[in-house]
Image (tube, rainbow, N blue to C red; front, side, top):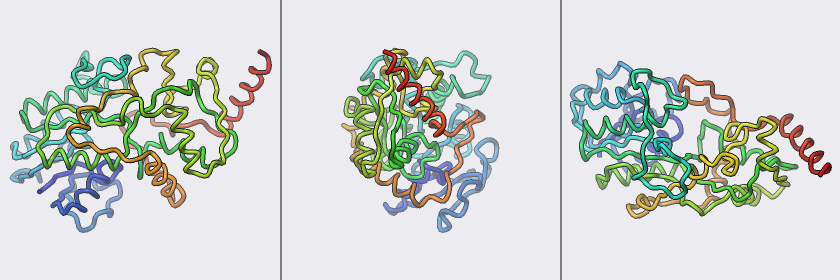
Length: 343
């Protein structure tokens, strides 16, 4: 199988390349040559920019295309046009953010999709999911029955450049008193990047098409069970102090950004279903999920030997490193203890 991977040297794209090479596939990369340019010296790499520099794709044919870096309909249409639709199967990495409503736990692929009021005004932020949905529709029009839309949940694991899940692994491994945001039973859902990569290749092999949620099994994990497992795997040196969500919100703590994985469902009901999407269809079609301890161990081993954090992907937005600073965490814990003592 000849596979064209758009990107291929950062996080998910890198995992797809690794799995494809291990499976003996013929891999070609198309990227700008800016991120980890020497990572795959023996792999054909076309240096180009999907935003206007796809000339070198003309006349080429691929059994499969894996697109990990498409955000707008014009970008996916440009790839199809450059290849003159000579594509057997197209994997578009979409997102569960493509759904309009995240308030209903267990919702599947038939849920309503997000919309964009004015698609001519390209920008992500609050329109991220809407543009993913429009990109899916553009591919379905261009390649009917040949596009697989991977509606991914939070992706974690080795070489994660976002730092979201890595924050918790590193912080808990460091030990001491760790601020853990309530409620403890908040649903948590994510998927290891290696499992997404394996699923993408599995679906391409079998010509699986359509939009399919690719994420962890809903109801399997809570924030408490995840943080406890991280502590168990990393040596048990942390003492988790659970802090009420109302207290944290009252202090202006930003969910997801300053405390990754935290989406307070009681205070903001619209969050209730974001980390409990149904993955039943993907499981039926062959998605396999590894144990949480495997993911934690891989991240911890990488953290110990990582010379520096990989740069975050630039979407044109401000991307601060997620997590609380040590000073902010200590201040919040002190205020929390004071507030508890005054009750």
